[in-house]
Amino acid sequence: MPASTPKTAILWLRRDLRLADNPALAAALARCERVVPVYIHAPDEEAPWEPGGAARWWLHHSLTALAADLAAAGSALFVARGESLPTLRWLVKAAGASECHWNRLYEPATIKRDTAVKQALRAEGIHCESHNAAMLFEPWTLKTGAGDPYRVFSPYWRRCVPRLDEVPAPCPAPSGLPGLPDGLESLSIEALELMPKVRWDQGLADTWRPGAAGAAARLRAFLDDAVQDYTDGRERPAEAGTSALSPHIHWGELGPRQILAAVREAGGVMTEGGAGHFVRELGWREFSMQMLFHFPRTPLEPLDAKFADFPWRRDDDNALLTAWQLGRTGIPIVDAGMRQLWHTGWMHNRVRMVVASFLTKNLRLPWQEGARWFWDTLVDADLASNTQGWQWAAGSGADAAPYFRIFNPVRQGERFDAAGDYVRRWCPELSALPNKLIHQPWAGKPAELDAVGIRLGDHYPQPAVDLKASRDEALAAFEQIKSG
Ligand SMILES: Cc1cc2nc3c(=O)[nH]c(=O)nc-3n(C[C@H](O)[C@H](O)[C@H](O)COP(=O)(O)OP(=O)(O)OC[C@H]3O[C@@H](n4cnc5c(N)ncnc54)[C@H](O)[C@@H]3O)c2cc1C
Image (cartoon, rainbow, N blue to C red; front, side):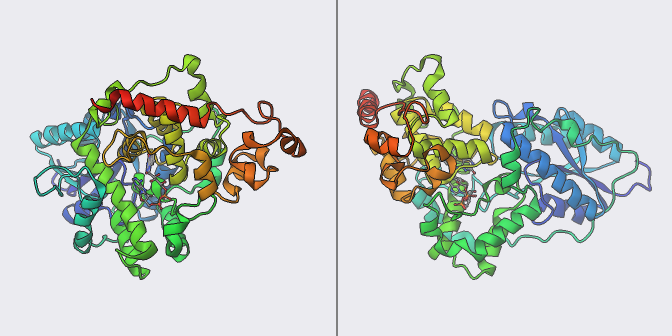
């Protein structure tokens, strides 16, 4: 390195796509005069969980927003594609860097990759530091009294709550950044080919504003309005009763420390009311991450080993799975959820639980099929939360509802979408049905259906399965593995 080269750090950005509360950026700036922010697209390194279609769409826009934020601060985003380690090695040399900083990820594949990168670069004399941007409590920090990982949420969260006051305050975004060294030739974000070739993404574009500014706006809107009534509002899928922050959080456009600070600033109490309940949901994200960290096989294998022998239904030609994926099962709340997912890349949590229960219990298809479909279609697809959500719904996970408590989608619809607004929005062909039939059109007399011009099997599917019979079959299937 020529004597005049300023001390330079590489900032390896992954799912921490923000400038504020970014500890890796703060550390790089504190130690070096020059920082080179780089995003390296290396989906193979996350196999078999490379980002799906909806996630790639989000990533494209999030990188675009980040590049604009970096440019406004006087820097730029260096974009590359290929294996991470050789790319970082090349960049270290090209930029004359002596340090590399990044924020930690916690999935089995990313831990393995990052560990190898750290060892290799350190062995070559590069100072490497990783930091925590994504968690209130990193997955290894809290254990039960017996020294085991928590497998039940309530005691886990009881342990976390008193420590919320110890969570460090978020660091502000730097007011300005040093420029990049001359001569570094970045790829364009378009060259990563993240956007779909066949444009199915209009619904996503209409729904979301990826990037840190979009995340901050959502958080503000939620704290100004919906948070007070969150405990009830979060159960009504027709309303904007939840924050819809999940994709922003997943991509690290907003960190949990920033959320805690904003809740406090808005006068929310961490343990009470709507704000307390909202913070507790963030706790489910933390819990899911510590489950994945300690049980890294759970994205593919049931945590409860007896479910490995569960007698799933044979689904010739994937007819039932396809009907579920397309929102054509004939069960309105399920179809509404699956269409919301396809159209917006997101689904309300209550409905996620209903469609997951329906797939794994009434259709009796493997939860892994559902998790895969969610993985490809969710903009917030997150290996920890998705795995935990699916295993919970299937009854095979940590802290799962007992298998025999099977959601009845009609009752769920009547309870949480009483006026049928959610179903009418996503299944408009049913909108003329009276409220008493909106969640079970098959219960209508022929004259009632005729009166609103609906013929089942023609305008809307007949139910793919009989709810009562399929429930009984699921319970019988469970009996076969119960003693295992
Ligand atoms: C089958 C199934 C699959 C799921 N897959 C995912 C997934 O891939 N990615 C994902 O982020 N969430 C997943 N969830 C959890 C939950 O449905 C979403 O986090 C939530 O709907 C996001 O909406 P929100 O941001 O409005 O949540 P809010 O109610 O506003 O909650 C605030 C934040 O807390 C976290 N959170 C809330 N509920 C949960 C939960 N049950 N588990 C973990 N974190 C939670 C999220 O980060 C969320 O943004 C899944 C749930 C189920 C039942």
